[in-house]
Amino acid sequence: MAELKALCMKCRDANKKPTMQTMTNPVVTKNEKNRYSAKGTCGTCGGNMFKFMSEADAKAMM
Image (cartoon, rainbow, N blue to C red; front, top):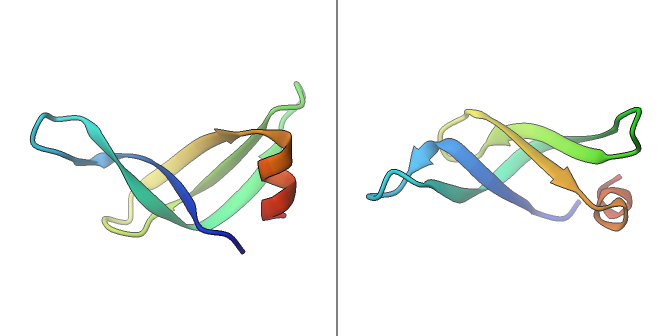
């Protein structure tokens, strides 16, 4: 499975902005409006992560 990066709201930089971290154990889902998303945990701090994805990226992750 490809590596997925997303913003982690717990891991912040010096300017208090979220940083890009690697998502572990991503679960790709599709909602009723045909939007794909991935949920997982941050590889650094263990916090929850969420990311909207394109259809092509979601099918590559499945």
